[in-house]
Amino acid sequence: MRTPLILLTLLFTASLFAQQTDDLIIPQAAAPLVIMPVAGNAAGANGTFFRTDMNVINLRNAAQRVALYWLPQGQSGTALPTRIIDLNAASGFSSEDFVGEILNRSGIGAIQFAALNPDGSPDQNGLLHVTSRIWTPRPDGAAGTMSQTFPAVVGGAADQSNLKVIFGMRRSAQYRLNAGAMNPASTMQRFRVTAHISGSGGLDTQVVEFDVSPRSIQQVTMPGTSSGTVQVLIENITGGAGDWHGWASSVDNQSGDAWSQLAFAGN
Image 1 (cartoon, rainbow, N blue to C red):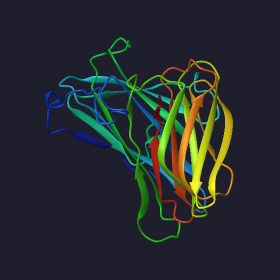
Image 2: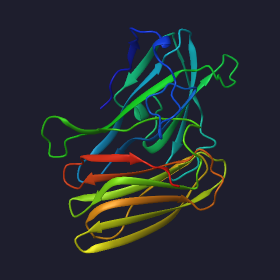
Image 3: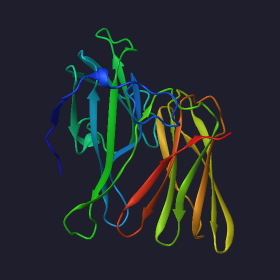
Image 4: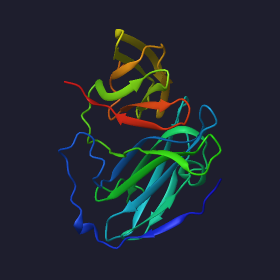
């Protein structure tokens, strides 16, 4: 299903918004570089098909050129072409299938939104704000959708640590546990995901290591069958990836309903 591009005109000015720098993830701020760690146009398990409903807003009282970079799963995105979009002052655009319709891509990946000057150089005065909903038609064929919001993050705002942590996940016969990492660097990076599952049977630990190609993402389903609440540790073993991001998702095996958390730097 494809939906027409929806243009948005804002009824407020950028002066109403002030950037904040004291949050862990800072999804609500506007910035010259915004990252959506996970987006997609891809079939999931048990009849689901996930798309990304996304809004991109220019909060400045001036026109803004925006570069869109696609970081695909499982392959380097270094040589992929850049999509350039020009936004009017205090305006934006929206698509219910952003990856398929705006980027003309399929599969899963991350998206970087970068404010540019007219000459193509980075525009540090950019005020981009991005919202996202990952959704699928109900796999049982009934009317309606299943969805979850997934926050964008301000580029460079997160602590650049080689170890990040996630709480609030669950794994059981009903919920599978996915985890992933985004590598914005121009070199291959290796990551280790450690899931500590705490349940009635005690503590079970599952570990998976994987390589992430330059400017790409990788997501894995954690092995094992133990049930319980989960703490996830994601470690950049190689080091030097810079502003990398990690996440974990618990996904209902029947309905496709899910919730996700972004990783934050561990002390």
